[in-house]
View 1 (cartoon, helix red, strand yellow):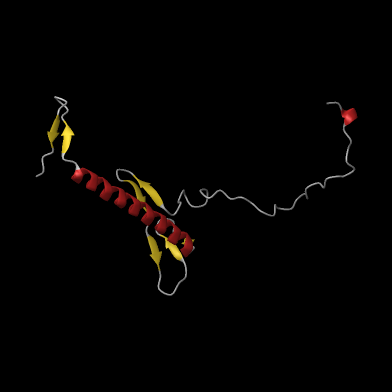
View 2 (cartoon, one colour):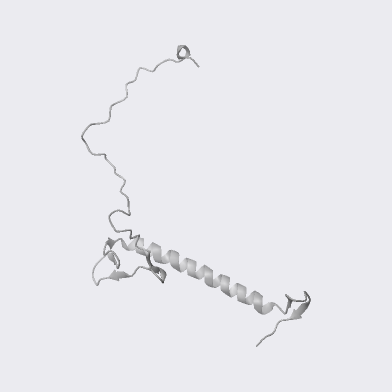
Length: 121
């Protein structure tokens, strides 16, 4: 395509203002809290450990037990609800699997390949 076929629109774009801070600024959420995401943190030998939350009588905010940042209660409630949902799903899967195993009467032997009765102790 050549410039002969292109018509320029008579509009000039504004230059960004100089010296003024941007209206919105994206802040790295890890830089100011020593890596705390208010959910869990890594402990050598134990793996990831959940954060403890501090609730104070008469206050509307929750405090992170690791970095002592004041948190929005809805943020903490959302974290706790997602953990409860995950636990509930794991429990339902466990119950379903235990029922499936309870209903089994026979299994294939690893050694001879024949079907054998399952021992119930």
